[in-house]
Amino acid sequence: LINAAIVYYLAVESNPSDHARASTIFLSKSQTDVRDKRKSNHINHVSPGLLSKKYSSCSTIFIDDSTVSQPNLKSTIKCVTLAIYYHIKNRDSDRSLDIFDEKKHPLSREHVPDDYSRTDPEHKLIYRFVRTLFSAAQLTAECAIVTLVYLERLLTYAEMDICPCNWKRIVLGAILLASKVWDDQAVWNVDYCQILKDITVEDMNEMERHFLELLQFNINVPASVYAKYYFDLRSLADDNNLSFPLEPLSNERAQKLEVGPGKPDWWDQFHKSSSCTRTNITN
Image 1 (cartoon, rainbow, N blue to C red):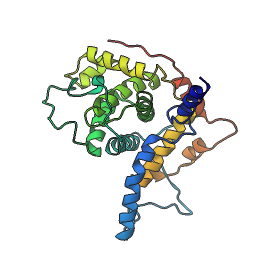
Image 2 (cartoon, helix red, strand yellow):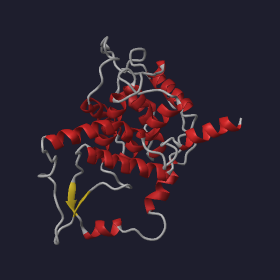
Image 3 (cartoon, one colour):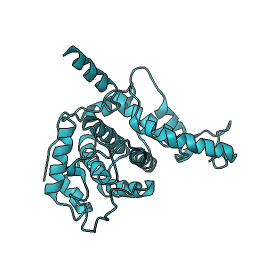
Image 4 (tube, one colour):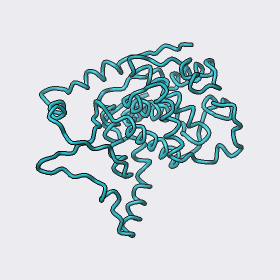
């Protein structure tokens, strides 16, 4: 029993979606590709993004418009979907569950190709899918980060992989929960049926119930975990030459960015929003 308890404790401690000290899975998954890109750029003497980068001067300071409390929506979605892309591309296996299989639970009436489970989606396809949902449901960048936390928590808890046959339904399930936990004006399952017109409310509810059960109803996201995912997404952006929009630093924004004693304002705000221990299943 003692050995089993130790193994369980170590497993929990190494789960990045629960503990800020653990490394995010997506960043580890991306490292092989990043090293190959750097090696290729070194051989070809390429310095990506060097000419287009803006630099601060004595008179003007350029700063991107994304902060941990107010991430840039478009850039955050690009980074989150890139993280999902690396999860799929560099997966260890194809472990899945029927509830997430798009062949058994299609999201549309369009014919699912026979090779759907063997063809990895491109980053732009994942981005378009997520962007459509976030735009139609008017979700926030913070919700995108929490979506990624839930996704990695699901893969860890359920011991499964995100792969071509299940990525859309896994991502949709994570967005369902994240939008209810984070956003003040929750988007109900029936609202998503207006976006994905061929899916039924019953299917959405069933998938959400399975998702919650696989998460062991643990939908809490500590502020430290949220911050870790945000900064690891920034690292992923840097590694893949994804730029964040730059703008001159104004006096008003400089005052907002000042750090005083104690925890920043967003810490309590996020802790309050993410401290729910349950969510409602609605029609």
